[in-house]
Length: 402
Image (cartoon, rainbow, N blue to C red; front, side):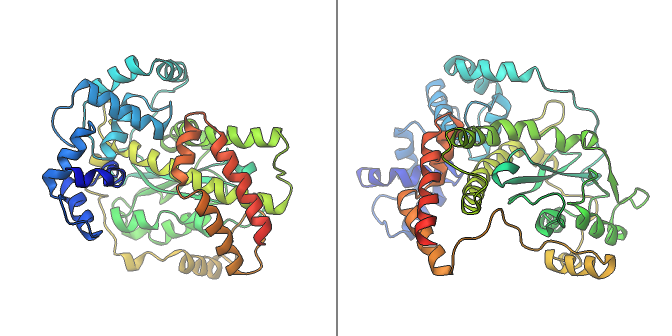
């Protein structure tokens, strides 16, 4: 047991990713560690640190586990989302017990969530089956800092089946094809949806084009292949944005606004725009990944768990070779529609004269900030200084290397 103790940080990281005791043991063996790495030894080491994968967890152990989870999720995860988050990393406990710990041990965070719950709206409609409707939308709460969120949600299971984060483009420009075409992996994995629902913006034109092109492969061909409505009526996806705002966007936005107010960053300057957009997008990606995994694993009252409801896929599967990739789809669109699409997007101008300069800047930044997750953990718990310091350092490094 003593021989494994120095490797606890590595073992803890693998455990929190949801790896089994056997997988952790095998990973340690591949790392060249030979002594005391059996599955039982791994289990015992984690148990000494109050970490268990299965079975009844004591109230004390559960409180410790949730406290550690809160350092990554922040204050906004209530009992359902926290249970989903724990499940997504392999820790399975009851929703009721999670709620009790959150109320008793984290009173300030509980009160903050309680105040926000008053603003929730009732669920407005229900789809008939997995693959009935897929809803796509974008979130522009961070456009001033060069970051746009896009998600796609199945209307029946409520599972987030696709998501992306990318630099913001001005609305007057051609729609970027990456933003338009985030659903290809979802379609090839789950199958065809009967109907795609989006708002009246032009950023999803390519998706609408491909949905109509492949409409004969749908389960119910009596429905229109797509429907454009007001954003307020794209119900399933619109309800998710307040969750993403609170859990990912607002903490990072608060830090960036503080830097603006202090005149530490100038968002009119091209290099600053480029750096802010790139680092912020990476940070948002960490938070969005955690949110998506937690959402898809949490229980929706009267409905079930999105992952379970979507496990069988849609009613009609489609061969992957029939679904063009983004470049192929853009070529088809431009040929048939005679319109252009933005193939590469950025916020600000790339300041680097060569790839070597860019690699050098990334190396210098990584040496000081090897783990961006730690910066995000601090930000969602209202400790903004680490993220702000990292951003200012990256701006300085970029200026020196460009």
